[in-house]
Image (cartoon, rainbow over all chains, first blue to last red; front, side):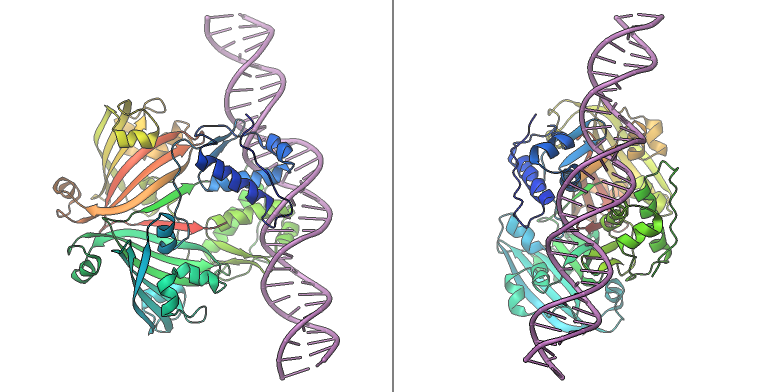
Length: 245
Length: 245
DNA sequence: GTCAATGTGTTGTCCTGACATCCGGCGGGC
DNA sequence: GCCCGCCGGATGTCAGGACAACACATTGAC
C-alpha cells in the first residue's frame, strides 16, 4: 500500500497540511482511494512526503472532520465506506446551486432599514428596535421558484446594494466586505405554507415547507447575520454531515 | 484578564487538553466567561496551567469546533457572542429528549429480519435483497407522539431485542455492543403526512412533517445504520451548529 | 494634522522527540 | 486444537522550540 501520489510545494503559500489534505480528498473523490482502503501510516506518510508527523496528522484530521476517513488507534486509517456526498458547510444557497450545476437567480423583494424585531434582536445581540438592514429575496433555480429568504444584518458591518444582490450570494458579499464568517447556529423545521407564500413559490396553500433559521458569527465572535428562510420541500433538502473528533 | 480558574489533574486518565476544554466550556455555559470576553493568550495559558502550547492549542481547537469561541490571528481568542445552544451532534432522539428534560418513551412497531430494499442497500453498502434487521418505532415525548423512525442495520454487528429498545435509544445499544459511531451523513427535508402517518402521530392528513434520513458509520468506516425518520413539525425541530476550522 | 513605518503581541504553521495506549496477529503452552 | 500472553505497529497524547503572518497601537516623518 503506497497510496496516491502526493506532492507538496514548499514554496507555495498554501499550508503543507492543507495541500496534503486536498490531494487526498481529490484522490477519494476520483476513486483512486476506494471506500475501505487503508491509508499509509502516519509515519510512512511523513517519511514519504518529507514532512513531520504532526503536519501529516493535521492533514488527516482535516479529512476526518470532513467525514471522508476514519481513524482507529492501533489499527490505522481507512476511507469511509459508501459514496461521499459534499456537505453544505457554511455557504449560501447561491453557491450551493452553482456547484450543483443549477442556475441560481434572485429577485430582491425588499431591501430597507427597519427597526429590529425583538426575536431577531435577541439572535443578533442588538437592542430591540434598533436599526438594521432587512432583506427579503425570492430565489430561483433554473428559473423555478425555490425559496423565500429573509435576512437581517447590522448596519455597521456592510451596506447591501440591490445590484450586488442580483449577481452574488449574500455570503460572497460578506466575504468581499472583509467579514470572515466562521460558524453559525441553525434551526431546521417544517410548516405549512400560507396562501401568500404558496403563491410566491408556486405551491398550493398548506404545502409543506422546509424552514431554516440561521445566525452566523464572524471571526470576532460578532453575529453578522440572522436569516429566516423557507424552501419548497418538494424541490429542496438540506444535507449535513456530522463527524466526531 | 486572567480568566476562570482551571486546574488539571495529571494523574487522571482524561487527556489534559480535554480537561482544559471541558473547564472552559463549563465556564462559558456558567457565564463566568461572558460573550465577547477575551481568553488569555495561548502562551499565557500554557504558562499558567503548566502545559505546553500544543496542548493548550488542542483544547482551544476543541472549543472552536464546538462553536463556542473564535480565534483571530494576531489578535486573540474570544467567546462567541450570543447565547450558546447545544448542538444535536451524534446522539439519538432518546438522549436528546432526556437532556431536554422531557420523558422519552418508545413503542416498537416492528422488529424483523427483512430483505434489504435497494435504496437502503445502496446507503448501507450491502447487496440489495440481502438480509438486514428492520426496525420501526413510534417515539413519544411526555406521552405525546413525536416521530416515526425506521432503521435498517446489518445482521452481523448487533442483534436488537425488544426489551433493549424499550428502555434505551438505538445509539446507546450500539455503543454497548462495542460499536463506535463516528459520523453520519444526513439529509433533512419536509413533506406532507399520509393518512396513516397522520393517524399515528395525532396530526391531520397533509400536515407538514420534518423528514431526516441518516447513514451512520463507525470507526472502521463501516456503515452501521441507515434511518428514515419523520417528525411532527409542530413539535420538533433540528438544531445544527456549524463551525469552520 | 495626516500618513507611513515600526514594534509588539498574537495566532498559524512546522519541526523533532518521546512515551502511552490500543489492536491484532503470532507463537508457545496446555 | 484451543487459549493465553507477548509483541510489533498503529494512533493518541504531550513537550519544547522556531519562525511566519497578521493585527493593532505607537512612533516618526512629512
